[in-house]
Length: 243
Image (cartoon, rainbow, N blue to C red; front, side, top):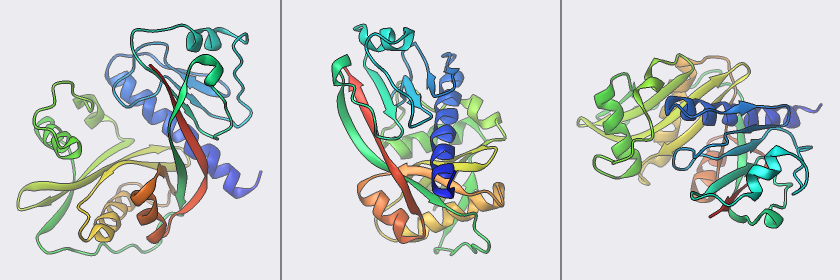
C-alpha cells in the first residue's frame, strides 16, 4: 500500500470515528463494519448515517440490510459520506450534496505559534465555554438543538480549540485523535489574518497530540487556505442526501 493511500484510509476512518463519537454523545448508536460505518437512526445535524471506509465498498439496491436502510423512505434526511467518491446512489433516490478533498499534513516538527496581538489559544474545558464556542462556530446565539454536548469535554481523544480575543471566541476547530493521526474539523476563523489562525490551531494540536499527522477534508476557500499552509490533498469525497 502506498503512503498516500494509507493516509486516505486513515482520514476516512478517523472521520468515521468522529461521527460515531458525536452520535454516541447524543445517545445514538453507530456500528463499525469492515468497509463502512453506519447509524440506522436519525443522526445529529450535519452528521451522516453512513461513512464508507474502503474504496471497495459497494452498495446495490438488492445487496443487504444496509441497502434496505438506504432504500426505505424516512421522515428525516439520510446522508451518506462516500469517502472515495466512487458510489452512484441515484438509484436509491439520493442526490449529491457537495464534494470536497481529503487533506493531509505530516506531524509538525517545529511549529512555533505566531502570536497575534491580544489573541489567546485555549482548549475548551467547561460546559459554559463549550456553549460559547458553538455559538461562535454556528454564528447563532443560544442554538436550540445543541450539537456539541458536554460529554465531548471528557474524552482525551478530543480537543475543542478556541482563539480568544478580548474575551470573545473569534476562531476555533476540533481535533480528534485516533491511533495513527489527528482529524481536523469544524474550522472557523476571520477572513482577515486567516493564515495565522490556521497556524495557531495547528500549533495547539501539535502540543496536545505530538508526532501525529493531521487529516481532514475541506472545500472552496478553506481548501485553498489549507493547501497554502502546507496540507496536501489525498483524494475526493462526496456527500449524498436523500430527503
